[in-house]
Image (cartoon, rainbow, N blue to C red; front, side, top):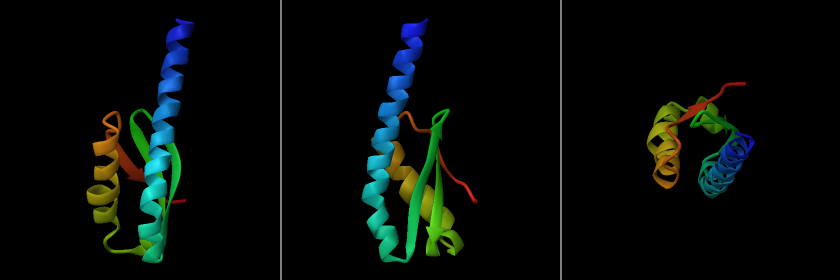
Length: 88
């Protein structure tokens, strides 16, 4: 049981590293438009992020999140089922 738990933890850490790498690729495009994106956590196959700057107040925020960021991450990392924005 302990070995299985360790495997699951390592797999989640690997997924989190991939998510962070993808966010780092997306970030320059958002910064170019006055926004930004921060990774918050990965839990239960859901990625939690925070859209910042101009992205936080943009009328296109949902489209950017779902049709851009979420689609890219899910296509690259099939374990991810959803990306959610967290307002702080």
